[in-house]
Image (tube, rainbow, N blue to C red):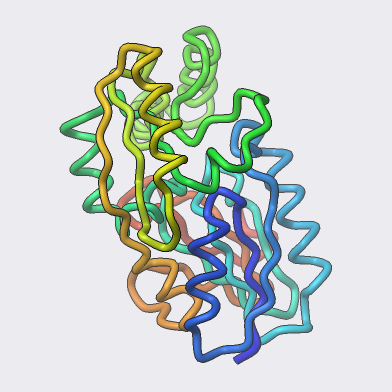
Length: 247
């Protein structure tokens, strides 16, 4: 297959590494990290790139999750889209939703670092941690969800997206073992010490990125056929497809 891979800079090294090992022909395009803080902008950027390559490839694979609803609404006219069933990129760092859920339940106030983020950050304040933001922003988001989806769905969304968190207490550096990450790890550790957080290094798992770029799309991925659109599912499937124009 000939694949177009559109991915976040926060996963630059893993994307290139997995693409190099894939049996398929893959063209990679990276999108600036940090846009998950403005989901509408990220959605527009992704849709623009999808439109630019629609009909050229056998499939367009997205190294993203829902990312604050940025993935909801994406569509292609003539080419399949494939996206991991993930709420955010941390699921991709850890290799699956089960491991992320375990981390979330046992260490809810965690700020996540990876090598690419630390190497590429530009002091804009962008964060890889879902839930970054001040308390007023989080309260406004919760009120918006209640108005749109009802209290039960709002509580669920705030939990799984981590937006109820107002404070961090733990920093984790995820090492994928692709390159020497010692300098980036030191940066993360120093930053954690300055903020009074505990620090841990854990080994990442790139199985989802490998499978996405290898064309192994069963179970953990949503295949969006031409004419379909991604919507949130508010359950363990994370997202589903509807025909364009459906409500």
